[in-house]
Image 1 (cartoon, rainbow, N blue to C red):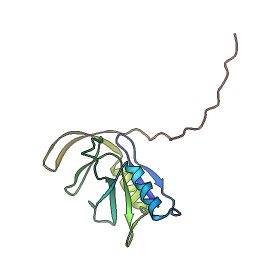
Image 2 (cartoon, rainbow, N blue to C red; image 1 turned 30 degrees about the vertical axis):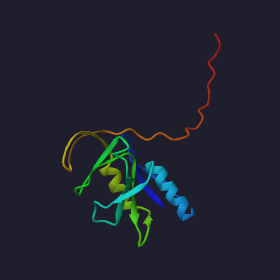
Image 3 (tube, helix red, strand yellow; image 1 turned 60 degrees about the vertical axis):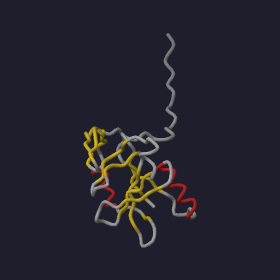
Length: 143
């Protein structure tokens, strides 16, 4: 399953969840992405879900992005996936590109009034690899 991960302060990036995992292993992999119990919200007409940490706000996770449809905003990392008949599924390539663009800018939460958020969009940083490759050490010539 290919999903789009959106972390606070970073550009969205694709992540592959192996289809070979059992249901329990897949659930744990999804929970690992968001850092806790998952909650799905459905702010779009398309068959997609935003999956986030259901306790992100009360656990003090950082504000991530505002979400349309009266949902307010998401606190902590979330991912966007497709919806199958009974389960989550890969996000189709056209929607992957759409949501990469839609969530390309980080947001700073300035204030809230009910479910209306006041945010400021800022540049996101590219996500760095978790295990960067070892760079070749160049020895400097002795003098």
